[in-house]
Image (cartoon, rainbow, N blue to C red):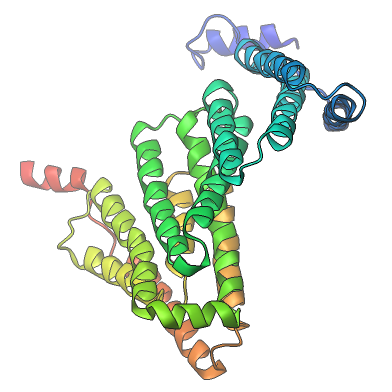
Length: 362
């Protein structure tokens, strides 16, 4: 039976509302897409190498060619968003353009600060111009990395607390972005803010590993002792308070009163995990990403949160600066808090706002 005949039968039976059958988009086999992907990206790398090593290294020519490549990529992303071949070609053209601009920056600009500012401007330009989720995700991740390097350039090792301030700010920005996503309920592939949300999650995952790496450095520990260990603990608790903020927001969205027993248990658990961040950093942030991925129906974000949570526990367990008994106690407390939340959700089902209104009408 042909697809059109099957659609007509379904429509005659009243199982469909549309009279016209939607267009069927046929995708190429996965191995053909993989070959196209590798071929286009290899060609992009070869083109960049050809411009860099074989052609005259004139900044004006390279900037003109890079502008043409970026304009072509932007036009392809906006005119043919669903075409796989043209989409990969647009990715390759964007890679060529960005690579040429970066080469001009490193060749002509001598100041490290100026280079970082130009790279940040390029990342923001690609983020705003390219109507593609992958491009915006990569551009947002690059922008966050450049911002971290700029902070490192301005404050240096003497003011190591800028890292914790940056991590806390990214955690609050993560909650704001995903609250907006869950409010609008528009999960389109090329949505701008979703790329920012995933980039913040990836940045926090990388920041967690960097923070644990510095915590094992004796020179860094000496600087932390000299400045203020209390301020460091307070900033870690501040970044963990985003979990409590998200928990309150989700409870209100589900119609659960904050004065109910379930809400008090969950908020107390979120507060307890945030306070444990003084000893075990990024545990609350990992749970924040995990809960956000579940609430927003984002499987990739759910995977990032699960990976980050396992990484936090592994990094903390093998942290040589803390004895094994102390680590076991804190891990036991964290597991007990999570089990308490699970039991509370099973034993005390939430009473939604709709049920409450129906009871009032009766």
